[in-house]
Length: 399
Image (cartoon, rainbow, N blue to C red; front, side, top):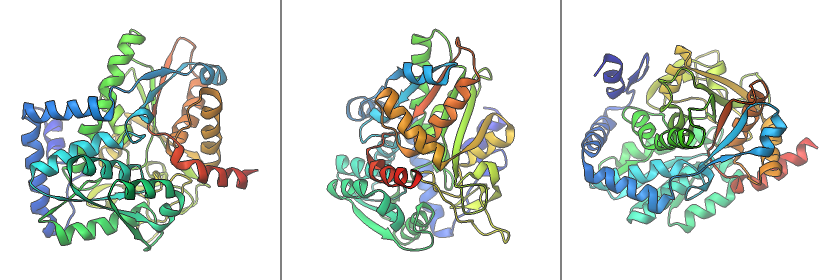
């Protein structure tokens, strides 16, 4: 094991990661790290997890050629990794199934989660229903408005949805509330964090559960294309879908990796959520990463048309990939994301999540600059049923 691998196990990715938490959470994080280490070396756990991914989640998800989007872009062939076809409609279920298994392994009965777009909340509620665990989800009031369908889905699945009225009433505030709950209930509660953020071991643990996306993509590209893709594009909020697909290609320098953040309404503070484009090193929700901050060093307000990208931080491994130059990160505006939402729907019959629509816009730009014999994969991280009403409202605003 080299030093870099050891630092990842210890919770560091270069200068980013670690644990910045109250003492009350240290024992629970140690318990989780120990349970995960034991599970990873337990063939029964691995076999059970993979069986659930196959028979419950519906994996492997297809790698689908997008002929009309390819023709529209006018360059590289575009392929879609169809995480929208996984059970619950997004990649989030890969992580929640894994963490629910760990919850049972630790002997805990209650689960809490934060959610923005609602997909992680739905996936958590789904996993808890499958395993008979009590579930409470924290969600900002603004996101409750934007994602009413997912609020109903969570309740239908037996979860209690706690509406957070603090601050900007979005994902950051929901995470704050969930962290407060966990500090008060840590003995009998596991917090299923939904992205590659938070204190060690969450960034590595979530990335590990999501890495099935990249493994499948690699195998499918070798089978269908006979080689690796030239470029992979994914949206980045906290960064779990992107980490899940990128991690299997990090050591392949011939594969360009591109993360698309929420460019929002513009580059002024409070108008976007492009953390890696505009942020600075700082601590947020238990780890050192890159954070959007104001002039006083306080966490900045953010904006995005997509509730899942509306977050002022990013996973520490993404911060490391950014500073090392291995992954390119850039923003896409609300307006262009809405256009891409419509574009994929009209050209390929796939209605994408607004989060994913950011990646589609960025990918179309990139494909146009590439050669026709090259191949670009978009991680289609979620379906857009949840966004239909909000997209209709936004399209009215853009007319």
